Length: 146
Image (cartoon, rainbow, N blue to C red; front, side, top):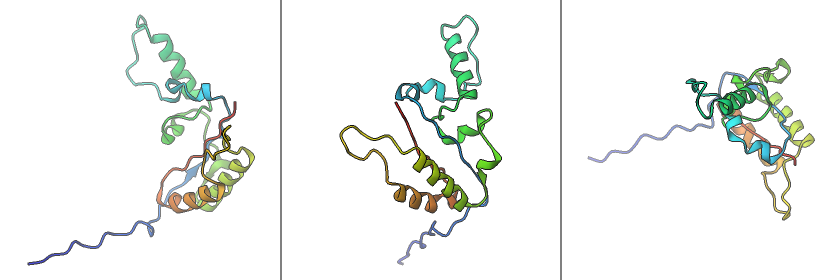
């Protein structure tokens, strides 16, 4: 007997019934961005006060909660204090795309010193975002300045 696998469903027709938050822009130095400990939420198990790294733990945890430094995972923006705003929350993906376009235009991505392109073009970014936002996927646009 011969059997065939069922046709795989397409994901392009999926829609996501939720909302989007816009965060940023973050404009800072590569050195700040590279401090990954400050970009991670604090671990739920705190070190004892006598631990060698207790001070660093408190410093990083405090910076994570209050700074605009982008977290390593986009979903962790929601754990930061004072980062969500009603004027940057949308239920229509087109409004989120307009905000993304404005931010990309006002704060273009880092330009490499060798002249090569470091990031996708604005048109490419918008086409990608228009495709995946309705499916509930996050979009980021990094802007780093020295």
